[in-house]
Image (cartoon, rainbow, N blue to C red):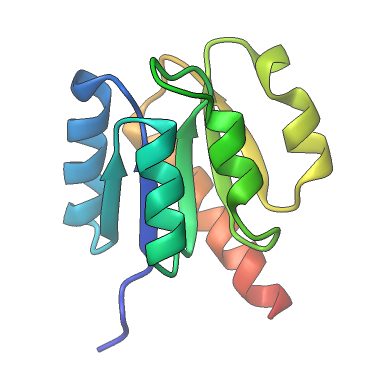
Length: 123
C-alpha cells in the first residue's frame, strides 16, 4: 500500500479547518492541521509536506509566510477571500492555485489532485 501524501492545512477558523481535515482524511491523505502561521512553519520544519492548503489571512501571522517557507515544488492551494490577495504567489510559484472562499470541498479536492499529479509528473 502506498504511503498517503502528507497535506498541511493552515486555517485559523475551526469551522473551516475541521471539516476540511476530516474530508482529506476520508480520502486517505495524512493531514497536519495548524491554526496559526507559527504552527504551520513549525510543521514544515518537522515534517515532509507533499502539499499544503493555506488561508492567506490568519489571526496570528500571514499565510504568505507559510507558503514562502515551503519548497518550490510543493503544491499549494491558497484560500483567499479576494484573488488579488495572492495573485502574485499564484503567478510566481509553480503548482500554486487560488481557491476563493467560500469553496466547495469537492472542487478543492479536484484542484489538489490536479496539482499533485502535475508535481509528480515533473519528478
